[in-house]
Length: 295
Image (cartoon, rainbow, N blue to C red; front, side, top):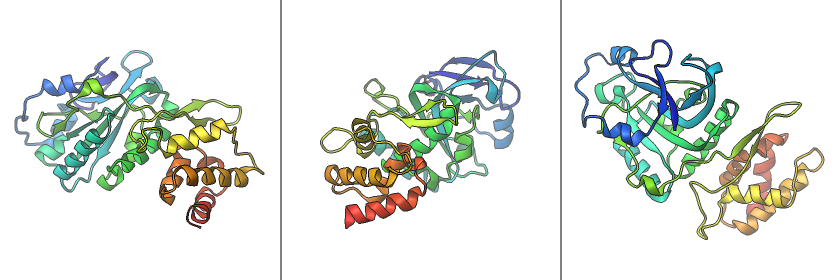
């Protein structure tokens, strides 16, 4: 995992680009950081930061110098009770074999404008292009919600997560830093969307392999089913065929996932990129799921 680092505050260019292992870094920290009187001063001039990105050339700190993205970070600014979030995170790690990390920020440890603020970090199996960052963040927000962590309920700064080269504070102490205990058995998250440049506009087309969620049968989840079904049957979404094909796919979902909820079906169409190809996605999808799944 390659990352660009700032070693002493947020000013100036990156200091170094190097391989980054969160567990090794966390092990190098003291259990508790020495007291800090001025949190803002510490964050500006002393704290260490990183952006999970490799650079094109040198250490220039600019969005134009970002080669690719190797992980996604969520800045959680409104955490009423860190212990509750911690427990949800542990449950996610137990139920899933994905690699992820959680840690308290300096503001949470020493006091600041964001009480109990935390960082949630998900490294990626394969680096993604800068153009894919925004849809990848949206995708991961939905996936995390489905496994019990609604980052938006914790005040996630989604704009920051989608900002190329945005600096994120590294863990400052072992207490409040949660890392996987069985890292050798875990895998990094695979972003489903892929970037294809067309004559008209970039299209975000999904691929699939199961990560966070599996069905009781251990096969693919609802998202994977939609992708595999539309691919197998060569279903496209051109004008004049969208209505019939949407009915066809939802009918197939009813047979494969008879207990699927309307919101789950809509999320699947959204993550796979199908919703963005419909004229009125919310109306079209929800009306059909209500009629076909519940009718």
